[in-house]
Image (cartoon, rainbow, N blue to C red; front, top):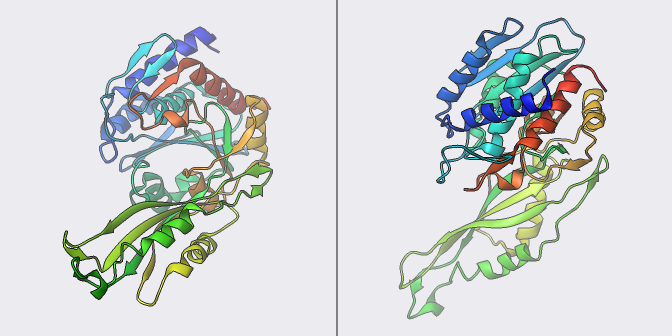
Length: 361
């Protein structure tokens, strides 16, 4: 086992290298090729490449298999393309989300030759874009055999805490109708944009549910995120479109969540208006009692919290694989120009996972 100082240095160096490899969504090939070279000489691993997704697995005949998964893509550059190290902090695009998590996974994959359980390391593309482009979903469809496991840990940034489950997310397009007229004679028409007033009022006073599920408190949300309307500067608009985003807790499926939104907006809809579900991703149920994940909690010593955002935990949950989020870095720094991760977080997450793979509960 490496000393903490040796391991810290190795993880910092690997994180810096990964940050310096551009991998904005749809351009992850160089990152995947580097990971393939990094792990390709490990005789204890079997590698499989599916497009820009890479899976490395041990096949030791253990009775249990754990999946460690992380996405290789980042959001677009924001003046932070290159990594820099200042003291204990690594700065750069994807530092927290999630090049640091990839560094932990890659080093574990290379060094943990005889783990107490079989391990599948999944490096997948296109998480930061629309769900239809997901590399993880591509794997589930094309090679589900590569993702079989008793439990899964997603290396999303959690500051070394365990975030269980995740809320679902959906977008609804609401269209309100009116009648065109000249703005000099507005009484001859009906202003569709003005009709938004009561609907927006209902959204702004919406009281979110805060259900407790498996001992964890979730908090739902309903927000207007986009408005489009208007024809010309001298025309009373006859149509306006409002997009609403709803984050819903794991005790509701898509149908129940859609109906909850409909109940809020229905009093403000008339014949001819539109209500359309345009995009959705189901929630992930919080798996806090699976033996492997319970062992992770004991090893980390951290409290388990509810994941209020959406992560690929939901994809594993939908396939019957209990999953949690656990990784280095602060999620509130993700996608920011000042994105960063501290080396102490890297070390803590690594040691926790190292002990879990060694069977230390």
